[in-house]
Image (cartoon, rainbow, N blue to C red; front, side, top):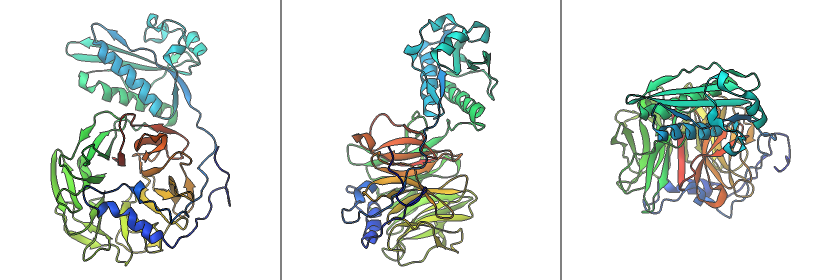
Length: 461
């Protein structure tokens, strides 16, 4: 049960602390520490700074999920049963992951589903209604030479008919089956919500290895297709996407936090100025980064995406300015600054003018990301109990809490359509793992079931 609001239905004011500036410096420690000792953001909490945000989690009701039945995929005409298993498993896992459906357990099917076909005339809808299903997904694979004929269908159990989708059956290579199943799931989501799903998109993230190195990886949003980007034995962190699938990241490979870029398998250094080169954010041909030119202080700059040369300095303040993130139309930038005595979210025009403070609650608000819809900025903040949680703020400064009483939660990143977030959480006591969450906080689902030490996920869009 969520705690009641202390001051208002939407939010409560933060406490203040004289040690907040120390806190933001500690937040930046990973970018200045040695390659062997660079800590995570969770390591930066201090016992002396317990004041923070206290906001009720957004919403109090759970999302209603549509019960959907997904029986075994039929392997026809000599099709490989392993491909049929892959289709079934992908359908079940990703429909569940989508956040709109309750996939019914197979052991609840009290009849032999193998006696049915995939056409409406061959389905006993009364049986499926008694199971409790409202939606029914039927699937089959058929061997056609070295190709696979994939047939996927959605039915309304109540109406006893097939539902027309923005998808059609196709014959394709076995290597493309999973991709096509995800396209079908996106079409199912579009039927029920009016917008296609997020499957087929990718995330980049960092993960520490047993050797102590920290590498950049990219994978599909459903956890498949993991690809390692970095091959050094150093600390690599803060990945972000650029045009054409490029990935920017900061690496300690040469004992300095330098900015690198990965393009189609080739890695090159983009900015190697003494001090910090980090937090790359690309939009509309412009690349915003954090640099510490001329001293230890950090500011936000625009640099050339081609050669890393400085185009324009956007902030010029005695306090630390870091973590730029673009508005979807590339006209504004949000960033973190310590100029108010704590880590707060600020916004400015893309040319650095009209800088203004956006968050006035808390003392430790970090890792902002602007929603693709343009109306909110999501961030990680430290609450009154010294826990880290995910919050969002609108352009008037109104804050909503998205996580609460579920461990520490960090580094949110929006899906391309702004309906979902991927973030890091240490809930469950099994280390930091990646989670999916609806943008309103009502639906949350574990994404990475294997391994730990996942951090800094960035959703490609």
